[in-house]
Amino acid sequence: MLKRFTFILLSLLIIFGFIGNQASLASTNEGEGINEKLGVPIVVYGDTLSESQEKKVRNLLEVKNQANIDEYRVNGQDIANYIDGNPNSRMFSSVKITPKEKGSGLQVNLVTPDNITQVTKEMYKNALLTAGVQNATVDVASPVKVSGHSALTGIYKAYDEKGAKLDQERMKVANEELDVATKLAEDAGINQEQVSELISAIKKEIAKQNPTSKEEVEQIVNEQLKSLNIELSAEDRQLLTNLFNKIRSLNINFNEVQKQLDEITSSVKDLVNDKGFWNSVANFFNSIMNAISKLINSLLS
Image 1 (tube, helix red, strand yellow):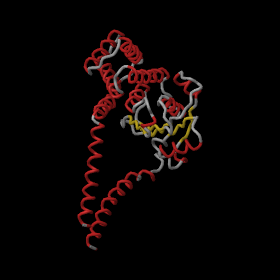
Image 2 (cartoon, rainbow, N blue to C red):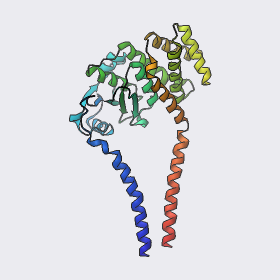
Image 3 (cartoon, rainbow, N blue to C red):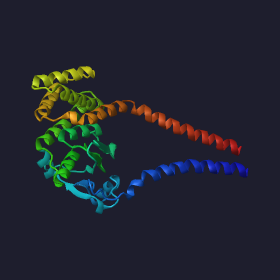
Image 4 (cartoon, rainbow, N blue to C red):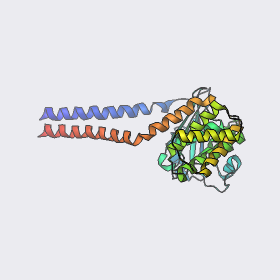
């Protein structure tokens, strides 16, 4: 009997020791110092946050040492200044921007995806590329459920405060892009992943074809809708055409961010089977626990 209990104990130690090692590896970044070349991360808090909510957001964004980051706050007046929003807006969503080496691209993480109800990370990434944000990791978090639109304002303010002003027109068009994306996902009968894939595909075609008129933009929009088997009303098609005609007029070189656009498309395709994947993961661990339970019962019987 003693040997059986010893075997059980060793088995459990191996399993939980493995889990502990993974947690230890995940925390190895806590001791990183200040990057003197790229600068410290920037955190922008929504001004409506209470003291306890701000503390929660700080933990969510893994702010371990406030001396090693630059902190700002964004309010309703900022949303009016940067994207012509409502100056009475309540701001909860907060962001952390970590500068990366040139060529690293743009990475967006939704730390609290259940609380960002309308904007996916692919939508953020598309809009930020339009605004001119590159070579950074952007983490978005909110302690309460919000649409997620105000996070863009926090990002714009962060760049402004650091003296790296983004183009005002590109920022406004990026916000319009986000508005169109969320509207289509809510009202047009297509899901968020399809919207992100569509927007990325149109951008790639604009980079490839370099349209010179609104009519050519409209043709690209229609071609991509057909290619992706997406049906939209005439009104929604016009929304897309108007948006991308504005983007065309900004002369954005999307060839420079082709890799990021490809990554958005790839990420969206992965999300299609995401539910099935996580179900298989859950089934895998359930089978392990069932096997362990049967082993323990057999040894004790």
